[in-house]
Image (tube, rainbow, N blue to C red; front, top):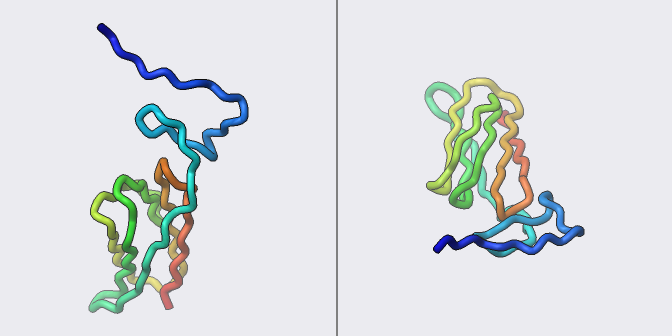
Length: 102
């Protein structure tokens, strides 16, 4: 026997505000707080962002996309400027983090 999940269609649901968790429509919430730090290194600086939820897609300053599952990222840079990261996860609204390396 085939089993299919049935979702009720509701006109006032927006995919920008909701997501599907298995077979339950849930409202997106704010992205959890992230911790960030900039540490000097021998060749420049390390940008460290932690407390990243498992399964988060990160769009890095150079537009590369990675799937983060270990809760933390390290970006090594050698130029003092602003670096923007975009965090996307199905359960949360996207979050942009801008790090100023001085």
